[in-house]
Image 1: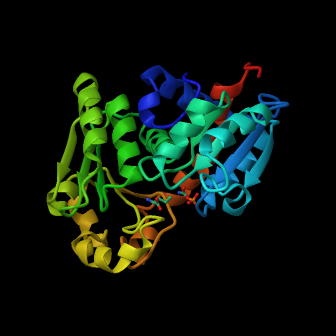
Image 2 (image 1 turned 60 degrees about the vertical axis):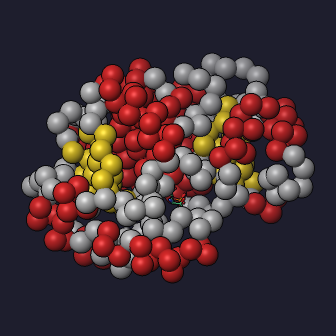
Length: 306
Ligand code: CP
Ligand code: NVA
């Protein structure tokens, strides 16, 4: 595996297999020695519940120490240059989990520091989320082939990451967005290139009805991501026809799952009824963040000395 996990594109198919294998093993049997003596720092510029708690608990369960550095502690990129933060923290820490506004900050931390950098969400990617989501689907179905995974909503950081991992594992991935809210063009192009090799079918459409037809998964995320709060009103209008409702499941395949990275804004991107329905596996996704990230940390750090 590479030194860092910045996006799903950093992972080879064999790395994803190794992550999923170890996730399964760690879920069955705890091991509190794998990262004994390692120190993981969480450098966060945005709020978080799942990412913060699952990384902190995960690191501790593997025997590592973990410390949370809040936005006001570091003032990343404001109090001192990111490249200085990287070079200082790499003298103390074995890994940083970083949650930033600008994706460039994650790249800078990784290129100036010799510790591993794990992207805990940036404006472009949320790779740990996508890994946990696709693991959750695999856990349920035992396969990536022959499934239609549909995302409805904003072509945001979660979509970019799902596209990268879906392409790598050969999972068919359809994204329905309103005009003006497509996934990042370069990332989508990169994912399409990989999908050609793995035979994953990646489709972007503006037609939400067609996108959910025969879907095995309907996934959505918030319409207004962290940092976009000023656009909230405009986005509510733009996404109105993209709310996930129970009606969509009538056109989806039987047993279609509902997925969401959470936090959920009930009444916006999805109705309360869907979140609470038998289709919903959102809490399994949230739980699997813990198990998948433990595997990621173990594979990145185990056996490496500073
Ligand atoms: N899904 C997710 O990353 O949640 P948090 O923002 O609470 O970490
Ligand atoms: N797209 C959302 C994901 C939150 C986990 C955001 O960036 O705010």
